[in-house]
Image (cartoon, rainbow, N blue to C red):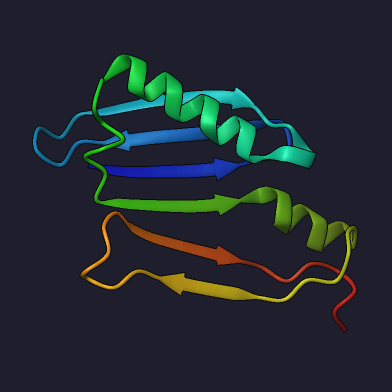
Length: 106
């Protein structure tokens, strides 16, 4: 199973893909800009309610955010660093997260 998350300015989209049967489940929650993780958690709860046990079976999580892109374009927010992390084959679920640079960094 794979999970995709996009945190937007208004809504947070979550998509669960089941590689075993090709099925997918989606959900959208309102984003709380100062606490974006709340919408991610709400989306995960909705997916878990529709397909019990799916969170435990996740093999990969991909997270993106238009909040950061919008902050960069609008030149809002505090200076931030860029970071990228990828899990090793020994770590499950494999978590790949990319943070973009916000305004004020040059």
